Image 1 (spheres, rainbow, N blue to C red):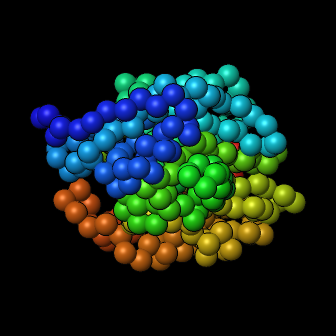
Image 2 (cartoon, rainbow, N blue to C red; image 1 turned 90 degrees about the horizontal axis):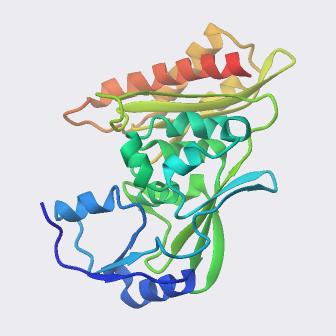
Length: 287
């Protein structure tokens, strides 16, 4: 398979990249890691006239911890973040999630922000961003703006990014002290996209669940923040009864799950609840 013909540009700055995107609009696509885009091009599912390669833009490959957040630049490879010194201590949730993303060969090239901008609902990184309360820094012709991950995803492969905008950084708040975390998913094979999965964080305070975050993924158009499950968990006594009740609420929250050759809608709805219950149990054990 070969991609359709396209023009190629390698800007030397974010401003130059934004100017190219602004000039060409919907006819241009950003190339970062290319792990999703190149497949779409080769299958002729995408036909941009121009690829804007941001790999040579200085400063976009930085990882830094400041202001209580882990900042990840647009050209940070998933593997680079996975091996970032101290990630296990500073943000173990991200480390756990990254190890579910495809295979090491893909993570060597794929970027964190590229996965977020691509917005595949079965991918782990969008769900991790929502669960962690990440803020996404976006730059366009009118300057910079930030948006919460929960508001960023609109529907399948669609975000609030305008054609002339570039996602330049994702900022993941560090987990509060004493937090537990878990990422659970079901896949056909290791490294495949999730048929259904869940991301959970929580603390245990005074023998009760505190600050629960529950996100299901692979079951709908966007990562699903399960607020009813979070409300049921908050203040509950940790244990199988709480996990079962909240897991059932996750299944109920999956209103319009995917239904395809890989898994039926009812299977995805059921598995989402089971994965969430398991994630709650593991997160509580770590808290």
